[in-house]
Length: 356
Image (cartoon, rainbow, N blue to C red; front, side):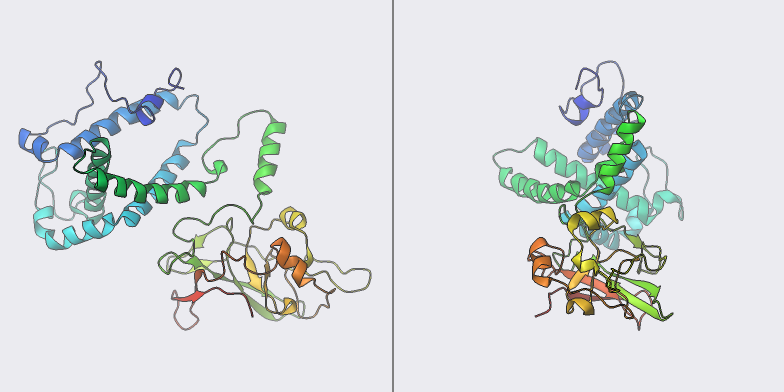
């Protein structure tokens, strides 16, 4: 790869030597260089990497803005996971005036109310310092600090594995090839198995601090009555947060799409096979169905049950064995927040469980 990708040697091989260009940070005094050497070294390497990526963007099939958004999400969540956010917030509380009346690296005095003196700027700079210290710790690990370096690396690696496993290839790669190949790729992306994969990091439900975020889905029944479904999101359910802290339904309600059987009864969605559910667009979302004895069953807008319909018998045991009905064992007990009717934008924490 290093033979055709200029950024490969920076990002993978970690080669940051170049005798033909000056990538150093400008206007830095000797005192600042000595004090903030880790941070300045990081900025130098960022400059070198950025230039090499610009050389690659003509032929690599990456959607670079999307990659940038994913990496921004990654850095923000890793900072939270490592506890860096707490350290940065505490520093801003302890030294608010000193930080806002200082000078930039270039020597300019910060203006009150400007971006340079804003919380956002200080948090991003603080994160840069934390990253510089962290990478320096890993690159220069010695016998004295090897234990600290390994512990920090293990903690970061645990997060990185979970985060990047949840990133779908379609988010960052352009479709390249002929129309038939593109159609095949698009079809395969629509046919993901909702029972496989992982939940998005930060909404995995593994702890009260990282709950799934349930949401209401409103519809009208065949009798014209307003119905509300409480939806448990699946691994591939779109996430639509609202400005007031709530979560919106990602589904467009177009009425019932089910048709009666020759007997006049309907087939409940809990009786569908996994292949049938994937064909109608199931993303893993579920709701508690009275028709299925209160068990969680797949939710696909237009295919949920209606009080005015009569249904063919549901083989609940078979549905549980196939993973279609009920929470899987590894999800029983996970945490989820649900909208609070009495507090607009408020959320209530609950623990998921199968009916007894």
